[in-house]
Image (cartoon, rainbow, N blue to C red; front, side, top):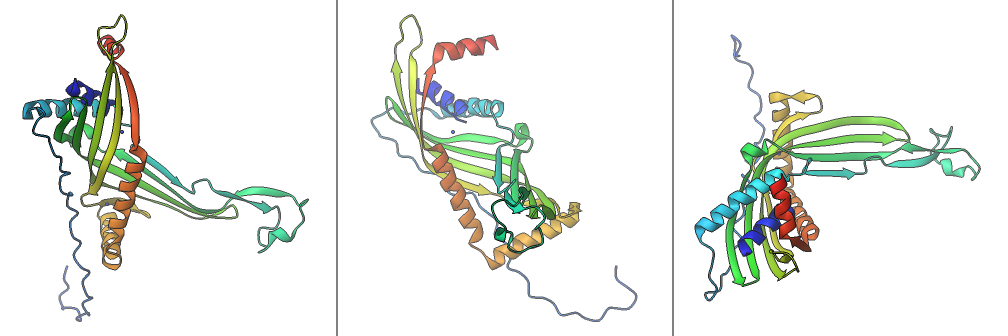
Length: 289
Protein backbone atom coordinates (compact mmCIF):
# COMPACT_ATOMS: atom_id res chain seq x y z
CA UNK A 1 0.00 0.00 0.00
CA UNK A 2 2.80 2.44 0.82
CA UNK A 3 4.36 1.80 -2.58
CA UNK A 4 1.10 2.50 -4.40
CA UNK A 5 0.37 5.45 -2.16
CA UNK A 6 3.73 7.10 -2.84
CA UNK A 7 3.20 6.70 -6.58
CA UNK A 8 -0.20 8.33 -6.50
CA UNK A 9 1.06 11.17 -4.30
CA UNK A 10 3.82 12.38 -6.53
CA UNK A 11 1.85 11.68 -9.64
CA UNK A 12 -0.89 14.01 -8.44
CA UNK A 13 1.05 16.58 -6.43
CA UNK A 14 3.14 17.16 -9.01
CA UNK A 15 3.70 19.08 -5.14
CA UNK A 16 22.01 30.50 -17.60
CA UNK A 17 43.44 36.83 -38.91
CA UNK A 18 46.52 38.31 -38.39
CA UNK A 19 47.86 41.13 -40.68
CA UNK A 20 51.22 41.13 -42.38
CA UNK A 21 52.63 43.49 -39.76
CA UNK A 22 52.08 42.65 -36.08
CA UNK A 23 49.84 45.22 -34.40
CA UNK A 24 51.05 47.42 -31.60
CA UNK A 25 50.78 45.64 -28.28
CA UNK A 26 47.70 46.50 -26.27
CA UNK A 27 47.45 46.42 -22.50
CA UNK A 28 46.06 43.14 -21.30
CA UNK A 29 43.06 43.64 -18.98
CA UNK A 30 42.98 41.83 -15.69
CA UNK A 31 41.04 38.60 -16.21
CA UNK A 32 37.82 37.98 -14.36
CA UNK A 33 37.88 35.13 -11.88
CA UNK A 34 36.88 31.90 -13.56
CA UNK A 35 33.26 31.09 -12.65
CA UNK A 36 32.97 28.03 -10.49
CA UNK A 37 30.62 25.35 -11.83
CA UNK A 38 27.41 24.97 -9.89
CA UNK A 39 27.57 21.52 -8.38
CA UNK A 40 24.57 19.54 -7.26
CA UNK A 41 24.07 19.72 -3.50
CA UNK A 42 24.77 16.71 -1.35
CA UNK A 43 21.99 14.12 -1.07
CA UNK A 44 19.37 14.71 1.59
CA UNK A 45 20.01 12.02 4.20
CA UNK A 46 17.24 9.84 5.61
CA UNK A 47 17.34 7.58 8.66
CA UNK A 48 15.55 4.24 8.70
CA UNK A 49 14.43 2.56 11.95
CA UNK A 50 15.94 -0.91 12.29
CA UNK A 51 12.67 -2.45 13.45
CA UNK A 52 10.65 -1.56 10.32
CA UNK A 53 11.03 -3.58 7.07
CA UNK A 54 12.29 -1.39 4.25
CA UNK A 55 11.54 -1.54 0.50
CA UNK A 56 14.06 -3.32 -1.71
CA UNK A 57 16.23 -1.52 -4.23
CA UNK A 58 14.20 -3.07 -7.07
CA UNK A 59 10.96 -1.75 -5.59
CA UNK A 60 12.44 1.74 -5.33
CA UNK A 61 13.70 1.54 -8.94
CA UNK A 62 10.28 0.39 -10.20
CA UNK A 63 8.59 3.20 -8.28
CA UNK A 64 11.04 5.76 -9.73
CA UNK A 65 10.24 4.55 -13.24
CA UNK A 66 6.51 4.80 -12.63
CA UNK A 67 6.91 8.23 -11.07
CA UNK A 68 8.86 9.52 -14.10
CA UNK A 69 6.08 8.33 -16.40
CA UNK A 70 3.44 10.05 -14.30
CA UNK A 71 5.51 13.24 -14.15
CA UNK A 72 5.91 13.41 -17.93
CA UNK A 73 2.15 13.01 -18.32
CA UNK A 74 1.40 15.82 -15.86
CA UNK A 75 4.09 18.45 -16.55
CA UNK A 76 2.53 21.95 -16.59
CA UNK A 77 3.03 24.17 -19.63
CA UNK A 78 4.80 26.44 -18.92
CA UNK A 79 6.59 25.14 -15.83
CA UNK A 80 6.77 28.63 -14.30
CA UNK A 81 5.35 32.00 -15.32
CA UNK A 82 6.03 35.07 -13.20
CA UNK A 83 4.98 38.67 -13.78
CA UNK A 84 6.89 41.43 -12.01
CA UNK A 85 5.00 44.66 -12.59
CA UNK A 86 3.82 43.50 -16.03
CA UNK A 87 0.87 45.64 -17.08
CA UNK A 88 1.47 48.26 -14.38
CA UNK A 89 -0.33 51.57 -14.99
CA UNK A 90 -0.77 54.94 -13.31
CA UNK A 91 -3.38 57.66 -13.58
CA UNK A 92 -2.31 60.92 -15.25
CA UNK A 93 -4.07 64.19 -16.09
CA UNK A 94 -4.96 64.34 -19.77
CA UNK A 95 -2.90 66.96 -21.57
CA UNK A 96 -0.36 67.25 -18.76
CA UNK A 97 2.08 64.57 -19.88
CA UNK A 98 5.05 66.94 -19.86
CA UNK A 99 4.28 68.56 -16.51
CA UNK A 100 6.19 67.33 -13.53
CA UNK A 101 3.35 67.79 -11.07
CA UNK A 102 0.02 66.89 -12.70
CA UNK A 103 -1.57 66.61 -9.22
CA UNK A 104 -1.76 70.40 -8.99
CA UNK A 105 -4.89 70.17 -11.14
CA UNK A 106 -8.18 69.82 -9.32
CA UNK A 107 -10.22 66.68 -8.93
CA UNK A 108 -12.37 67.65 -11.91
CA UNK A 109 -9.45 67.61 -14.36
CA UNK A 110 -9.81 64.80 -16.96
CA UNK A 111 -7.59 61.84 -16.21
CA UNK A 112 -6.70 58.55 -17.84
CA UNK A 113 -4.67 55.43 -17.06
CA UNK A 114 -1.36 54.97 -18.87
CA UNK A 115 1.40 52.37 -18.85
CA UNK A 116 4.12 53.37 -16.41
CA UNK A 117 7.10 51.72 -14.74
CA UNK A 118 9.32 48.70 -15.32
CA UNK A 119 7.59 45.60 -16.62
CA UNK A 120 9.26 42.20 -16.34
CA UNK A 121 7.88 38.79 -17.29
CA UNK A 122 9.64 35.42 -16.91
CA UNK A 123 8.60 32.16 -18.54
CA UNK A 124 10.22 28.76 -17.95
CA UNK A 125 9.39 25.72 -20.10
CA UNK A 126 10.63 22.15 -20.24
CA UNK A 127 13.22 21.44 -22.95
CA UNK A 128 12.48 18.06 -24.59
CA UNK A 129 11.37 16.54 -21.26
CA UNK A 130 10.98 13.01 -22.70
CA UNK A 131 14.73 13.05 -23.44
CA UNK A 132 16.15 15.25 -20.67
CA UNK A 133 14.05 14.44 -17.58
CA UNK A 134 15.96 12.39 -15.01
CA UNK A 135 13.85 11.52 -11.99
CA UNK A 136 14.68 9.04 -9.29
CA UNK A 137 13.83 8.29 -5.69
CA UNK A 138 17.22 8.60 -4.05
CA UNK A 139 15.92 7.10 -0.82
CA UNK A 140 12.64 5.69 0.48
CA UNK A 141 12.34 4.95 4.17
CA UNK A 142 9.37 3.51 6.01
CA UNK A 143 9.15 4.99 9.48
CA UNK A 144 6.13 2.92 10.49
CA UNK A 145 3.13 1.24 8.88
CA UNK A 146 1.55 4.56 7.84
CA UNK A 147 4.52 6.94 7.47
CA UNK A 148 7.30 7.13 4.91
CA UNK A 149 10.08 9.62 4.17
CA UNK A 150 11.18 10.11 0.58
CA UNK A 151 14.17 11.87 -0.98
CA UNK A 152 13.45 12.72 -4.61
CA UNK A 153 16.09 13.85 -7.14
CA UNK A 154 14.98 15.56 -10.36
CA UNK A 155 17.00 17.04 -13.23
CA UNK A 156 15.78 18.42 -16.55
CA UNK A 157 16.87 20.85 -19.23
CA UNK A 158 14.77 24.00 -19.33
CA UNK A 159 14.29 27.02 -21.59
CA UNK A 160 13.76 30.43 -20.05
CA UNK A 161 12.60 33.76 -21.46
CA UNK A 162 12.84 37.09 -19.63
CA UNK A 163 11.03 40.06 -21.16
CA UNK A 164 11.67 43.68 -20.13
CA UNK A 165 9.72 46.81 -20.96
CA UNK A 166 10.17 50.32 -19.58
CA UNK A 167 7.23 52.71 -19.76
CA UNK A 168 6.87 56.38 -18.77
CA UNK A 169 3.43 57.99 -18.86
CA UNK A 170 2.25 55.81 -21.73
CA UNK A 171 5.46 56.04 -23.76
CA UNK A 172 7.55 52.89 -24.20
CA UNK A 173 11.21 53.76 -23.62
CA UNK A 174 12.64 50.24 -23.95
CA UNK A 175 11.57 46.75 -24.95
CA UNK A 176 13.78 43.68 -25.07
CA UNK A 177 14.09 40.07 -24.06
CA UNK A 178 16.66 37.46 -23.14
CA UNK A 179 16.29 33.77 -23.97
CA UNK A 180 18.47 30.93 -22.80
CA UNK A 181 18.59 27.40 -21.45
CA UNK A 182 20.27 25.39 -18.72
CA UNK A 183 19.95 22.18 -16.77
CA UNK A 184 17.96 22.64 -13.57
CA UNK A 185 17.68 20.23 -10.69
CA UNK A 186 15.73 19.88 -7.50
CA UNK A 187 16.22 17.68 -4.47
CA UNK A 188 13.18 17.29 -2.21
CA UNK A 189 12.64 15.53 1.09
CA UNK A 190 9.03 14.82 1.98
CA UNK A 191 7.09 13.06 4.71
CA UNK A 192 3.97 11.14 3.69
CA UNK A 193 1.44 9.98 6.27
CA UNK A 194 -1.39 7.75 5.02
CA UNK A 195 -4.68 6.76 6.58
CA UNK A 196 -7.09 4.27 5.02
CA UNK A 197 -10.84 4.03 5.50
CA UNK A 198 -13.01 1.13 4.30
CA UNK A 199 -15.96 2.34 2.23
CA UNK A 200 -19.24 0.37 2.08
CA UNK A 201 -19.60 -1.42 -1.25
CA UNK A 202 -16.04 -0.68 -2.36
CA UNK A 203 -13.25 -3.23 -2.65
CA UNK A 204 -10.55 -0.57 -2.26
CA UNK A 205 -10.27 1.73 0.77
CA UNK A 206 -10.37 5.51 0.73
CA UNK A 207 -6.85 6.78 1.39
CA UNK A 208 -6.08 10.12 3.00
CA UNK A 209 -2.55 11.38 2.48
CA UNK A 210 -0.86 14.15 4.44
CA UNK A 211 2.20 15.32 2.54
CA UNK A 212 4.77 17.66 4.02
CA UNK A 213 7.89 18.86 2.19
CA UNK A 214 10.58 19.21 4.84
CA UNK A 215 13.61 20.19 2.74
CA UNK A 216 14.31 21.51 -0.77
CA UNK A 217 17.54 22.21 -2.64
CA UNK A 218 17.43 23.84 -6.08
CA UNK A 219 20.49 23.94 -8.34
CA UNK A 220 21.47 24.45 -11.97
CA UNK A 221 24.28 23.78 -14.39
CA UNK A 222 25.92 26.24 -16.83
CA UNK A 223 23.48 28.83 -18.20
CA UNK A 224 23.62 29.33 -22.00
CA UNK A 225 22.23 32.59 -23.44
CA UNK A 226 20.65 32.03 -26.88
CA UNK A 227 19.32 35.54 -27.56
CA UNK A 228 19.53 38.96 -25.95
CA UNK A 229 19.03 42.56 -27.11
CA UNK A 230 19.06 41.77 -30.83
CA UNK A 231 21.90 39.25 -30.66
CA UNK A 232 21.67 35.55 -31.50
CA UNK A 233 23.92 32.53 -31.68
CA UNK A 234 27.56 32.94 -30.68
CA UNK A 235 27.22 36.71 -30.24
CA UNK A 236 24.39 36.24 -27.73
CA UNK A 237 26.33 33.51 -25.94
CA UNK A 238 29.48 35.67 -25.69
CA UNK A 239 27.50 38.67 -24.41
CA UNK A 240 25.60 36.50 -21.97
CA UNK A 241 28.74 34.82 -20.65
CA UNK A 242 30.38 38.22 -20.13
CA UNK A 243 27.40 39.50 -18.11
CA UNK A 244 27.15 36.32 -16.03
CA UNK A 245 30.89 36.21 -15.32
CA UNK A 246 30.92 39.91 -14.40
CA UNK A 247 28.00 39.49 -12.01
CA UNK A 248 29.67 36.50 -10.37
CA UNK A 249 32.93 38.44 -10.00
CA UNK A 250 31.33 41.59 -8.57
CA UNK A 251 28.60 39.89 -6.54
CA UNK A 252 29.69 36.28 -5.93
CA UNK A 253 26.95 35.64 -3.36
CA UNK A 254 24.10 36.82 -5.61
CA UNK A 255 23.53 33.38 -7.10
CA UNK A 256 23.34 31.82 -3.64
CA UNK A 257 20.86 34.47 -2.50
CA UNK A 258 18.62 33.75 -5.49
CA UNK A 259 18.77 30.00 -4.89
CA UNK A 260 17.97 30.50 -1.21
CA UNK A 261 14.93 32.58 -2.15
CA UNK A 262 13.83 29.92 -4.63
CA UNK A 263 14.18 27.18 -2.01
CA UNK A 264 12.14 29.23 0.45
CA UNK A 265 9.44 29.73 -2.19
CA UNK A 266 9.33 25.97 -2.87
CA UNK A 267 8.98 25.21 0.83
CA UNK A 268 6.24 27.82 1.24
CA UNK A 269 4.38 26.68 -1.86
CA UNK A 270 4.55 23.01 -0.92
CA UNK A 271 3.72 23.35 2.76
CA UNK A 272 1.49 20.59 4.08
CA UNK A 273 -1.19 19.20 1.80
CA UNK A 274 -3.94 16.68 2.42
CA UNK A 275 -5.17 14.56 -0.47
CA UNK A 276 -8.04 12.10 -0.40
CA UNK A 277 -7.95 9.27 -2.92
CA UNK A 278 -10.74 6.85 -3.76
CA UNK A 279 -8.68 4.15 -5.41
CA UNK A 280 -11.56 2.34 -7.10
CA UNK A 281 -12.52 5.53 -8.97
CA UNK A 282 -8.92 6.25 -9.93
CA UNK A 283 -8.38 2.73 -11.20
CA UNK A 284 -11.70 2.81 -13.03
CA UNK A 285 -10.67 6.03 -14.79
CA UNK A 286 -7.31 4.51 -15.67
CA UNK A 287 -9.01 1.46 -17.20
CA UNK A 288 -11.28 3.64 -19.35
CA UNK A 289 -8.27 5.50 -20.71
